Image 1 (tube, one colour):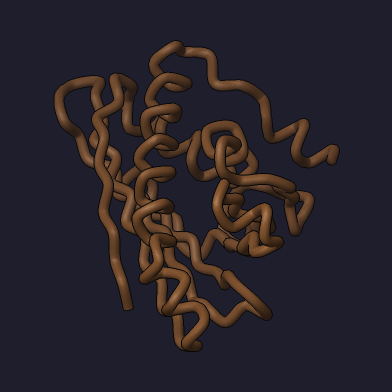
Image 2: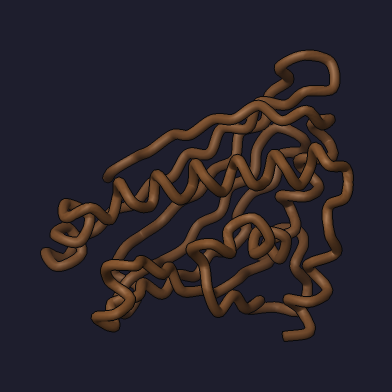
Length: 168
């Protein structure tokens, strides 16, 4: 199992950050630079059981037709401290994936967001993909996504992106 942790401090109340992240459809807004074809698996995009399916696109692997399909399901919500997403990625879902958002108070009105990404590639081709840069690329993209999340929430205008994603 490989684990990566990324943190960022957002100048927004923890409850606001939690509510935004608890709606899986909103993830398309701050990850759209490396996530394509984002679709909800259920009509309800909030709460335990909400799920989404999408492609992770890389400038190196995409031209070769090696995009990674991923499906994530909201597995656990501990308001306003923790959000856990579980899923599968890769060819026929061979790679177990876990994404955990840990939200802690930094200062009054500020939230430290820690994104912990865990993957468990069991097949040799999946392990090779991680060794050849997949893990570094994904870490870079997640760091960029947290910066975009920070901008969205600090501007005070989180979009109603969930409506657009649910509508297709």
